[in-house]
Length: 275
Image 1 (cartoon, helix red, strand yellow):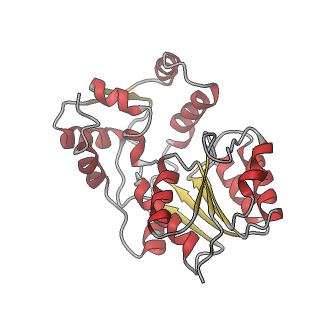
Image 2: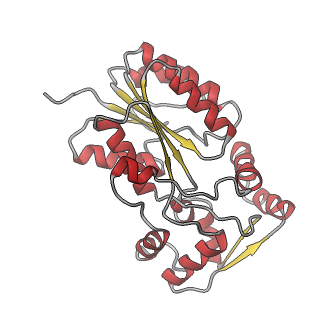
C-alpha cells in the first residue's frame, strides 16, 4: 500500500525543490511545498510556521534559504530537525554545500536529530547562470567576478533533484553522504565561454578585484544576507578547496553526471540568454 503522507519540500519553489516536486508529483507521491506562498506557509525566519507545515508529513527535503552557508543556519536547521522528529517525521534529506563551514555544521545537526538522514553535499549549481543573479550580466555581454583560474565542478540542478528523489523514495540511502559534482572542472571563464558558444553570442569574462565586485553588488540593492553570501562564496569558498571531482552522482544514480556543455546547450535553446 503506498504511503499517503506527503513529503515536505522546503524551498519548494527554488532551483532544486521545484524540480524535485515535479519528479515526485509525476510518480504520484503527495507533496507539500514549503515556502512563504505555500499552504500552510513556511518561513525559516518564523519558527511558528514550522509546526503547521510539518503536520502529517513523513519526510522532508531541507533546502535552507538564503543558503546553508550563512551564519546561524546550522542552529536553525538543528531546531527544525528536532521539531520534525518530534512531529513524527522519520526521514530527512539535506541539501548541503561543499567546502562551507556552516553547511558542514548543519550536516552534523541533521545526523544527530534522530531521523533517518541522507546528505547531498553539492558544488556550484550550473543553473546559477540561468536562474540567478548572473543572468543580467550574461545578457549584458560581460560577466565580472573576483575569481581567477580556480576550477569548479559545476553540478546540474536536475542531477541534484534526481538524487533527492531517489534518496526520498528508495531504500539504501539512509546514513549516506553523497558529494555531488559534475564530470569535469571548469573555470568561470570556461563556463562563460561555453554559454557564449551555445547562445551564439559574444560574452566576455572579466576577473575583477574583491572591492570592485563588492561595489558592483551594492548597485543591485540586494538583501544584506544575499550580499554577505555572494561575498563569502566568491572570496572564501572559491579558493580552490573544491577543485576535485567526486563519484557521488554515480553512487546514488548509477550514471554519470550531466556535463556543463549539455546544460549550456539545453538552456540556450530556451532563449534565456538571447537579448
